[in-house]
Length: 193
Ligand SMILES: CC(C)(COP(=O)(O)OP(=O)(O)OC[C@H]1O[C@@H](n2cnc3c(N)ncnc32)[C@H](O)[C@@H]1OP(=O)(O)O)[C@@H](O)C(=O)NCCC(=O)NCCS
Image (tube, rainbow, N blue to C red; front, side):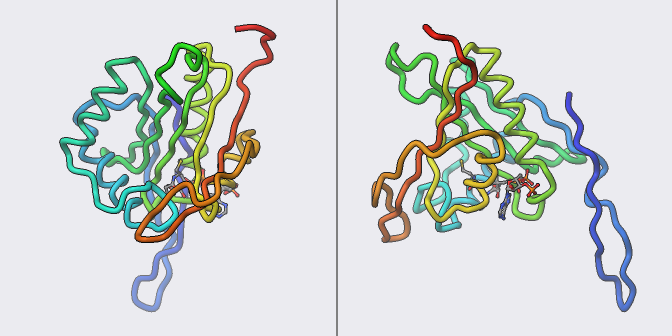
């Protein structure tokens, strides 16, 4: 298991500022079905954001369980970041398309609880997903990101993803068209599949 160094922040207490540990440590591990409610909470918080998770209404627990079973049933990884028993982030590596010709292509997603962002958790999840992709002999990873989602675009750029194209108004959320950016990252240089 990879452990992220604890991060610290200043918290106000009356007139005095104390240096407090936000968490003892963050563990990145494979998700189990009992993690789905924690994953759902983070996902549904992102559903409320305009430039993430293209859903207009929150997912139900049953929907997320169905997603979990679909991924794990096909050996697609779902990882969680856990601090003190609480899920603070998750990432998944799924299929781009189910057709045979895309069997070496994966699609990544990373979500971190709002209060736990900018502490390196998204980056650790991404590194673990890249490793999982290599282990599965994937050749290319794709990410589909809203054009206004700067944190996600930056996170992916920092981990070697490059812009493959923009689909103008290909998405919609909360009654508006959304421009969608496709990013890609090659995992190896093998000349043939
Ligand atoms: C995108 C997201 C996963 C990043 O998670 P995170 O834990 O905050 O990311 P990290 O702390 O590991 O940051 C890694 C890098 O991403 C970039 N980044 C993260 N947040 C950023 C922000 N608000 N603005 C600009 N760059 C940002 C930076 O390059 C950062 O490296 P740095 O801190 O050394 O500068 C998080 O913001 C999130 O969950 N957003 C909502 C859900 C979402 O949009 N997910 C992506 C859908 S695929």
